[in-house]
Image (cartoon, rainbow, N blue to C red; front, side, top):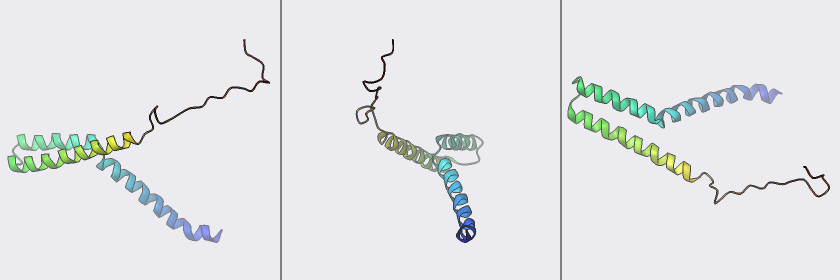
Length: 101
């Protein structure tokens, strides 16, 4: 019980840090955020807030991030079991059970 009291602040801090990491990971790996940033970048170019060179650099970086996200998604999909690598067993009642009509 004393250990629980002493370690509870550490457990709480660990929980908070894990939640922050999840939010940061989801934002970094979210395609919609990058697509919104691309739209914002296009608007800034049209409003002449940035020049063509700055636009090209930022656009290249955003597309690189988008490609990295897509590659990561494909990698994760390849790790999912498919019908060729998985099997399902269905067991029916043993011989002592009555047959259903």
